[in-house]
Image (cartoon, rainbow, N blue to C red; front, top):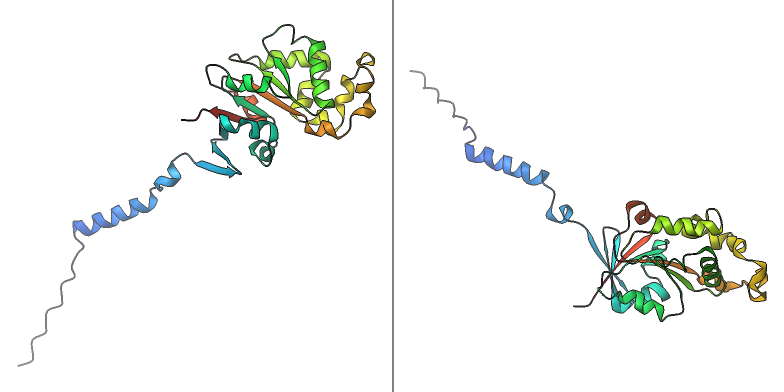
Length: 224
């Protein structure tokens, strides 16, 4: 008798547990990691400063505000290249109080006298001539459009020249000089000091979208 043929081995079908495992594995690969799904928070160490860059808004401790706004040696403003928009949420406007005691030209954006064309012109011209910051404090009100109109009364497109820094680069500041300003404001007296000019916008509220895109937004936080 011929030998019996051995029966072929049965091929095992994958069970439900195997399919479930593959499905979970695929889902795991397609799911973004928790680190990429969170809002990115970058902390920059600048000397002794601790600056957090969150969604293009830098958080700066009040104790560091002098270094960030006035000295700005390799800080976020210098790196960004745009003028700062400083959000000071403190109830007593600590940043405004601090800046008033510094070597700056301070303008209250809600003061009808300070916002007249001639005081504005003199404040801006002196800030450029002596290389000082010009601080525009809008407090808790969005009056940037109104302030822009006031600046433009001095010279058409002046605010755009300030925001783009053309007021310094192309020496457009000469349009601010008047014959009654005296010899100290003679065009030949504007030496290297004008390169230290800064324009600082101060407010208690967030900037609207267009202004946010044009400025380096800094939110001041108090120490715990």
